[in-house]
Image (cartoon, rainbow, N blue to C red; front, side):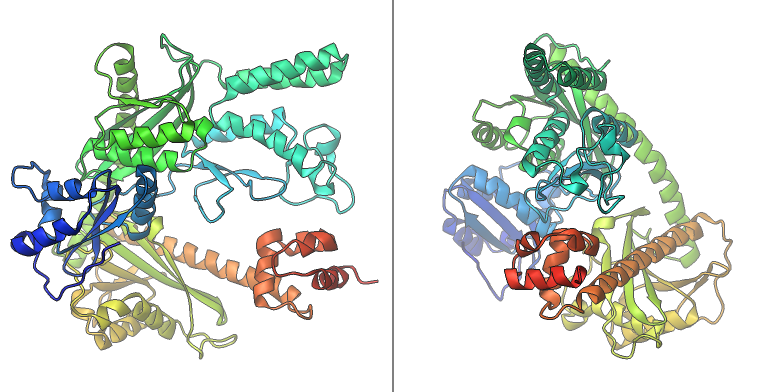
Length: 627
């Protein structure tokens, strides 16, 4: 890895000698490159089979660059690179670094929790299957499938899977010493009472996973063979159960036939529709001629269509199993790095994977169908965007803002008489909640304790922590910085606003930030230094936008506060056990997820937790089971 530092801050295009020196240092090997601007921010991350030629291509006068990339090149002051052994390593490293740094000029997929996923917790002995809108990659073994466009259909599929296969139906046991009615009617194998081994239960869950992997037809073939074997062995009841499972699986894919001549080939088809702001991407998963999944993604539309599609495919296949990768991928536009992606997928699947942009006949018609669905999704987003645009215009008029507020941040405090005081920071981008930018804060002020609350001091602390780096480094760029808010809204009245204004004055940031507060009682908007609220109507679009922001900040703060109280309550139970410190309590709760499950565990099961030996495991067991 080459990391270069320099006191010069001029862009490389304005210093030809320094540019040529940097380019000469880059080897012709596979890897990733990072472009930095004058404030040392990473503004672009890319990959290539030959780093030198790819990076050099950005600075050739004969090279025709898009307006976006040309703007980026004019800002580059430093170039870093990391050499990898293979293109596959470069692709994975690029994806991870983009997630970490969120470079402005890269294609960034929006994680607005609009579309749900299915999660299977393979990290647990008895895996759970549930629907979530929050994709957490903390545990490598857990698998996420999606995001799916139709949440209602997804819930129906999961409901049918739980009827077809005997799965755990409840997150918590209903009875302490016996299974519930679901076990008696064959809906559950008795997980709560360990009536089925983890190995056998995982085999059942694997069958459900095949449904979400688009392998229903393969699963039907496997079950059909098992049914015949059971019938030959005169196990007619078992054969009948498998027969019913096959019938249920066939009903899942009824009326989903896609007309293609070679319906034995598994393929994905991807297309997008875009306006000036957003790109809506649809990915159709077709297996054995059947549409088994329709996934959706959203991205900023400032990049070329092919680059957006490439980013979506790389993100989607990064965590996919080999069996989930199709042998053919149809794309609406040519990808900038088709060969790299195709080679990586071919290596992972151990079978040739082809990526092509069809121009004629049936495959082109399939891409047109996918694009049509993406267009419908874009139209729905545009309707919502029109309402948000009207609200932002009204808000800009109310507050006399020079431009529409692109990024608005809302802050709120939550506590019970000072205990477990926390704060929330929520962010709206173009009037839409951007949950990937939400933040929680635990109030550290020593004067805020149980029985003594101070919302003014708490808000001042949070704002100070949020903008500390800008106060400590006045040269840090704010113009064009996606992290810099156009408007800050404080939940409260004149007192809360005054506390925030005071701390921003101390940090010399008040002139650069527009701050207001929204009082709950009459939805009144207060400005710094003004004793009276602005003259507004509660039903104005701009005021409604602030109300949505305020309600979201309140919801987010309250949910975090409840979580802190719950965690504290759990720990208070475990605090009574000698030798069980905070770290080991965290390990226990991370493994068992609740005190109730710890109570039900045997000493041997408790001892499996890292950091818990057999002696401490026995003490924990004895605490919950006194003689």
